[in-house]
Image 1 (cartoon, rainbow, N blue to C red):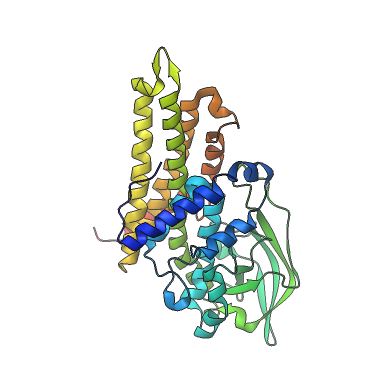
Image 2 (cartoon, rainbow, N blue to C red):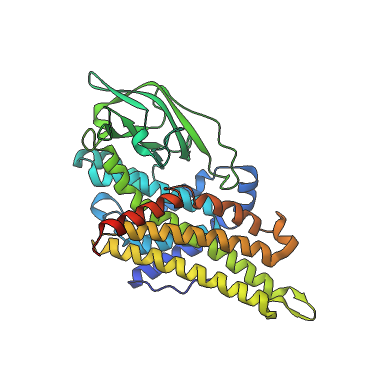
Length: 382
């Protein structure tokens, strides 16, 4: 299904058309086999980068596409409708570029951003640790100052694209306390950096999620992004944008499930009529459509606030919460629409259901989103 979108310009409409064509041609035919075999589609990310889709929300002066965030998120949604793992990786790449683009020096930006935003390099984000997921202040991975650089020791966890990315935005401890975390840009292939085996996941299997191990890996001082001790501020400011990316991906996944279920319901017949003509099932599909539309509206509202320079942290958490909960419900209902066939991996809806679950967990669990929202309510005007 082609989603009827409200776009700010003809250029944005053309960009969405380009994305849709690329996704139909390059992603849709390959997703089933790649997810079944866990095959990383490196060439797909090269194509997406060559099309200019990896740096869309960043300024043209930095090598990006100069697009509003509301347009970028709809690009992510279009990708997710065909291949959720690819869309998640594109979102994580954008998240990994944020610290360099926002807090990096002009020299650092000139050196690394053109390749990251232009598609020559794929970035990954390395914040979580085995004992520090939502509690980022509990980070233990150490970056000790040593002469003209830093020595990194410790383990990071849950890295999307670990072992396949070209650079890693790393958050490591340089001093005690919440003000003692710093941000670094780590190149792939750094001596002393190794990766664990891919996690055995329910879904998103084509893109590995791994741990990373730093065994006294030596990093030059010019790889520090921002000031020392500024890491958590950088990480949390990036996460608002990242949450919107996941909201858009979840919406695309839910749209794909709705489209497949509705198409099936128009073809499948029982008791002499299409099952979509049975009121009970038709109302289920109507609720699914309402959930997808509501999810899209919440992420677009937050994105437009971001584009206007207005505060949007609360709205980003609302969008992540609403969109990912909607994806979980819509994919579950899609399995129900297909009945026994929905439980079979001969049909894509069981994969959609498996992929939806993680959306409620990463970029801050939905319990954390509720905490963020409630704190905004407690601190805001009455």
